[in-house]
Image (tube, rainbow, N blue to C red):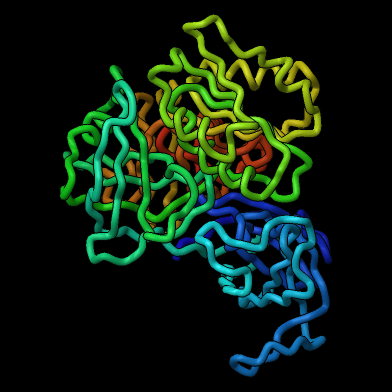
Length: 451
């Protein structure tokens, strides 16, 4: 278990709540009196944010298999279908008469009836020196195999990945990614395509990049039957539950995380539009599926070969209350971010997923005190903190090494980081309680880390 500072005690007032993203996990933090509770911020049913849910004075009976409600504590109600969770244990319960808080279909992504409850994960919380800390287990690694491989489009391969023992890989929310442990010791994050399937397999689509650092080439070299290892899903890029509308903008292979989002929104009857920007419709990934399925009425194809470029400002202005999700080349992400700011739209409604980012890791030298390891290390001007820590035998989870995946985000106990990553939010960076060790450095001469 790794402890992460997620807030000061004053940032969550009595009866209040706060949503945080730590180690690739979305967590809803609640304060009831002087007690702090942490629960996963994604309902296992459809991925709605539980932080946007409703707290009621009800809990389940303690008797196994007995679903009578009592007035002994607090229960958390999902804002979508109304699933309820004991906020202390994560235990779930469904009352069919209280479902359909909104008029969504009462079927899960896997086709199971709504009454087939799934518990929500909870996390131990401790208070130290006016800080709230949450303990999170290290992500599991699974032995897997390439069950199927096919060429999806020019330079794009689609892999179907299964657990080696025939069991089901972990479920995920649309927009999540997972690490693939590839040949040569490479670890790279890739988006999981679509929604979870009943067979428990994952699907990833990877573009062979000319400027690849080896990851895409290693994936394209895989064949059916090849063994590999995969990490549990993580998400910094997920749908906002109970939003008024959604605007999805994909550029090229950036369609991969957005495909599952669009599929889920269509199935739930939500208001949304999917803008898909491609160089040529003839080589666009997943286009036949999008045109043939429930997403088709919401699809807006922008084919550059036919002069159909997206008017970004017009797309954002079409519904100022929509949540905006963008994934694609850096120039598209930057253009959407600039247009969003120019229109004066709330920054909290812009959600970005980057596949890569140009980041400079060098800078002024500084010192790191690794508090739990009992080590003090000097970080020279030409090396990253992660490099030095790993060389010293202090484990740092690394994946993208470009500040876009969140694998190496670590708690800062003292000092001021110089943030260079693209995964922490503006609020998280301003709080200076986390640092992406693969790229960020220090504004102060010394950082104390909980590592």
